Length: 138
Image (tube, rainbow, N blue to C red; front, side, top):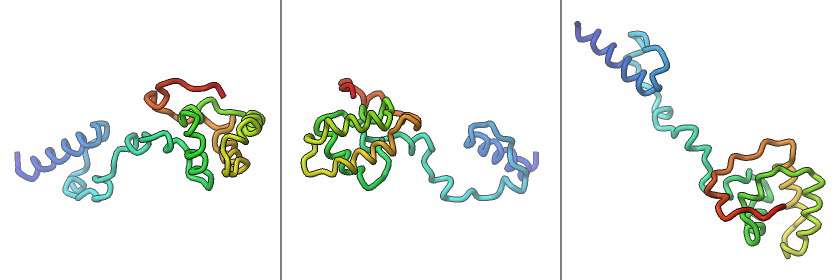
C-alpha cells in the first residue's frame, strides 16, 4: 500500500472514531484538512446543558436573583421549578407569600415565575440529586 493511501485510510478511521463512527470517512482531499480549533475545543452539548446548581434551573431575567435569594431561604429551589403551575396557582401562592420576602418586590418575582414556569411550558429537567430531601407541596 502506498504511503499516501495509508494516510487517507488512517485519517478516515480517526475521523470516524472522533465522530462516533456513524459518518462515512472523508474524501481523500478532506482527510488532510485541519478541523477548526473551536469545534475541537467545544464541550459536548450534554455537558453544557447539565445544571451545576439549582440556581442554574432559572432562566436569566430581571428577577432571577431576587427569586433565587428569597425563595431558597424557605424552599428547595429545584422543587420550585417542577410541577408547572397555572397563572391562577402562582397568584394564589403570591398572596400567601407576601410576608415571606420582606423588602422584595413580590409582584415582580411572581411575574417572573409565572412567565418562566407556567403550565404551558415544558418542565425543566432537574437532576435527581437536586431533589434529595423532598419537596414541600406548592
